[in-house]
Image (cartoon, rainbow, N blue to C red; front, top):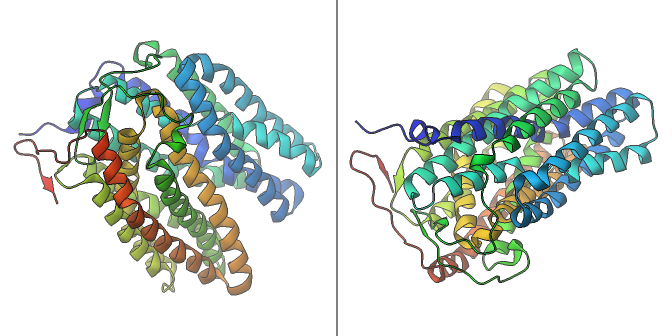
Length: 432
């Protein structure tokens, strides 16, 4: 009887601890955006002000995370992230205090900027630890990355619903206060686990890379570009994830508008949770399988399935149907993101891995901000289906970009000397 791949990887010494604490440290990323909107709107009565302050925080986070990750790659996780954690917590508490005191909007912007720019990307730090722990073990690293994508989805199921309940039923800043606590506690525990922290070296030999069907040992690579973003193949991936983020941002806003039009605004979080639930289930299933097809091909197919599903949102006329369609469409999200993270690992030199993984989150975050803005403009003009139209267009742009990137991605993987196929273990289900 085959072993459960997730139980197997979590039995690695220290793995369960850094994965759990890293998951707790990631909870704020799904709470601070909506928590800021709800708090500022409650104190000012203005959605416009709330949206601007939230946008400042999210954009600062998107721009700051890769830079923090570069410092982490150079100096180590604990050395860089401990002071950053203190600054992030202070920024969130300062934002809450200023908003509650009725401070003018220009005062809120720098506080939001500080809280966002220093928050980092704990998902990339956790994945860097898995990569270090599972060097030369491609099957288990595939399972570990899939498990972390499932954790991401769980965070985005719980976070928005929790933030909405706290901010509306307790006190307006409750969501941000909880985000500060969970981020602080999770971050401190994560950084205290020194035994699993990746070493800092200028060049790492034997780091694991995933070509899509498996992972192979990398060769020592020259320093190359100063930033992981400019490694060949990375700009193309970043653009694909930018378009994917636009889908998510547009769907979030359009779902709230759709629920409001049906006089069920409180159910918006539940419907969005269905989107993340589908992704969670598919991520766990995907990670339990070994695949023989090219990673880049599976990545492109995932974008096609996502775009096709999102296109159906435009035709839906009831909340239950929307929740069902979103849940099914969500099945395309986690496998596509898993494959994208694996391609980053294949393309980026080991000494820049954390930064490379952070660029995935940054691209999605930047796209989400753009999607929210574009969808909001269309919703004002044409209702919620105008927002879903933005998501549909972004979905097919994502497909075009992914297909256009295939030759570059395959060429770069070939130059890295990576294997194309992975042979499934006996008794393990195989995918096409």
